[in-house]
Length: 117
Image (cartoon, rainbow, N blue to C red; front, side, top):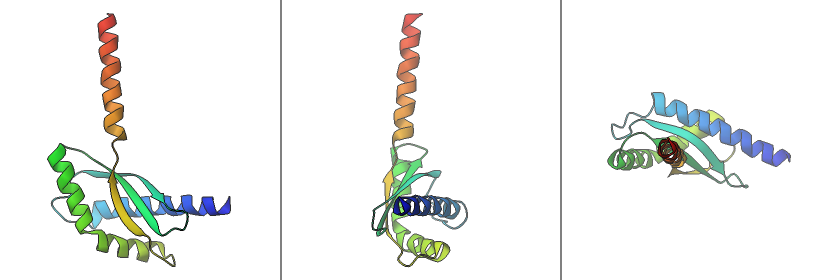
């Protein structure tokens, strides 16, 4: 139980620090409007997958992910310095499509509602 709580705290800390970095530190023009939606860490705290949502079309999503991946070294070093844990996890980025899926469901529901009337 205590280990799970520690993992959850670290996930939240990484999410907060990554969000701050997106706002202030990452100046890559390829990185557009990116939001950190979630962080998943392995049980041994060696790997962290950061889920991001990107506003824009497919090209904007692709260039934003390229920009984030090119800054991985900087991001990992900054997270290690800011959180001060013994071992900084390996970081990877994944696209969070849950917002797109939710939008798609909302459109379908509106369409069904419109068909009833």
